[in-house]
Image (cartoon, rainbow over all chains, first blue to last red; front, side):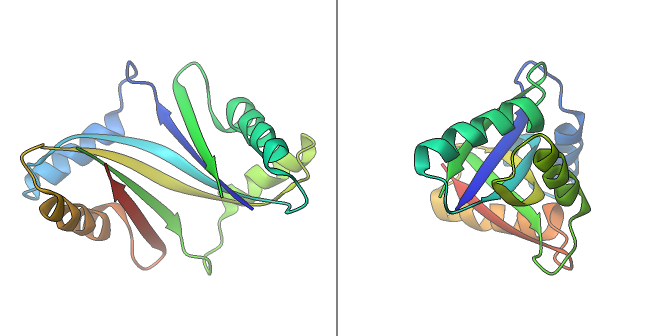
Length: 80
Length: 80
């Protein structure tokens, strides 16, 4: 079972990396890209003995306590 | 229109960051997590005047030429 966790900085937090990428893309001719945000992506492999609900709550705890800094970032995840 | 681009190192490439996270999780009691890979996540906002096919080919070019190092990484994306 795999969990995909996405962590991005909150909308209110400046994202200079994303802005640098957007500037680079504009100079390369990709003017259609009006905004870029960079975040982190984690793929967790979970033991198959876990049931769906247990996996969901474990991944939610891991994301909120370890992978994401809740002051500046927010996360989402999906399990498949 | 938003495009979500996911970049992860290839399976054959060592991922020391992911290993460090997995070790930390094991010490914190999350022994159910048997593997962690860390990657990058980009959210591109595209001009709404682009149609679906044009957006798809533009994001594919951006991902393969700018966001991903094809020697060590692979990408996937979705547009919504």
